[in-house]
Amino acid sequence: MSVFTSKLISALGLFLAVLAPLAAATGATEAEAGPIEAEPIEAGPIDGGAIDAGPIDAEPTRMALLDDQWELQIGDRLIYEVQEERGEPLLLSINARGELLVPLIGSYPAEGKTSKQLAHELKAELEEEFFHRATVLITQREEDRNRGRVTVIGEVNKQGEQLIPVDSPLTLSQAILQSGGFTVVADRSRVSVVSEGQEEPRAELDVGRMMDSGDFSSDPMLQAGDVIIVPRANQADSQVYVLGAVQTPGLLNIRENEVTLSQAILKAGGFTRFARTNRVKVITRDERGEKTEIEVDVGEILQGGDRSADRIIRPGDMIIVDEKMISFSG
Image 1 (cartoon, rainbow, N blue to C red):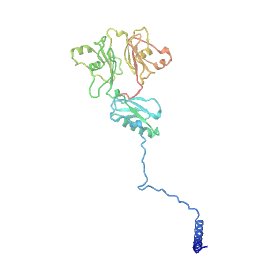
Image 2: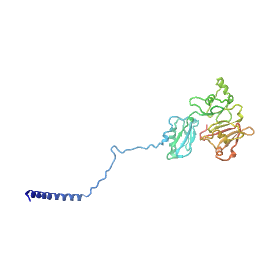
Image 3: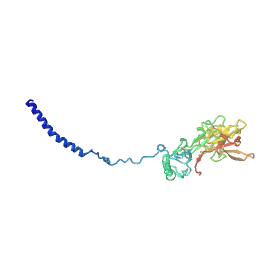
C-alpha cells in the first residue's frame, strides 16, 4: 500500500466518524417532532367587507313589459289577468267615476294611470291578503283606447265598430263616410241612430239629402254606444239585426222561410272571444205587436243542447250579444 492510499483511507474514516453523530441527531429530532399538522386557514371577509348583493328583483318579466305610456281614461276597456289564478282573462271597463271593479278588491281608481302602474298597485293589494305572489297583467287592445265606440250596420260598404276620437267629436255623416259610404241599395233617407240600451231610435235622418246639399247643420254628434242603422231600400221587411259580440255585426237578409237564432249568429260570423253566449237577447214583437225581450242560451244550443230553444227569427227582430264585462253602471 502506498503512502498516498494510506492517507486517503485515513481521511475517509475521519469523515465518517464526524458524519455519524450528525445523522443520529437529525433522526432523533424528526422522531420527536412527529407529523406536521396543517392548521385551517380562516378565510375571513374580503378586504372592503362582505359583498351584499341586495334584494333580488322579483318583478315578473311580463309585468315589466306592460305599457307605461298610455294614461287610462273613462270608457277604456282592459284585459285583466292574474296568472296565479290560472283562469280566463276578464274584460273590465273603467266607469264614469274613473273606477275599475276588480275581483277580490272591488272598486279601485284607474283613471289617469298607466296599465303598468295600475297592475303594480293591484299586485300590492292582492299580496296583502289573497296571494303570496301575484303576477297582474293589464293589457289593452288598440281599439279600446278611446272615448267610446259606435257601431254602423246595414247598407254601408264596411259594417262594424268605429272609435270616437280622443280629441274630436264624431258625427253621423262622418261615421257613414268612414264606413265606406252607402251601398247602391241603401235607403239613405231613413238612417236611424239608436242609443245604447234603447230599443227605439233617438233620431231618424235623411242623410242622403244632407250629403247632397252640403248642409250639415242637423248632423248629430254621436255618443258612445250608439248604433247607426242603414236599411236597404224596399227590403226592410226581410232583415234582422245582429249586434254586439259577434264577428260581423250588422243587418242580415232572411231569404229562407225559416232561420233560427243559432243560424243567425253563425251567419254573423259566430261569437267573439268575450261573448256572453248563455244570455243572448232577442227583441221581437208578440202577436199583439208589443215588443218583448227573450234570453236564450245559444252557447248550449251550438254545443248540441236543447234544440227546442233555438227559436225562429222573424224579420225586424233584433239579436243582441253582450260581452262578459265587469263594470259599474252610471
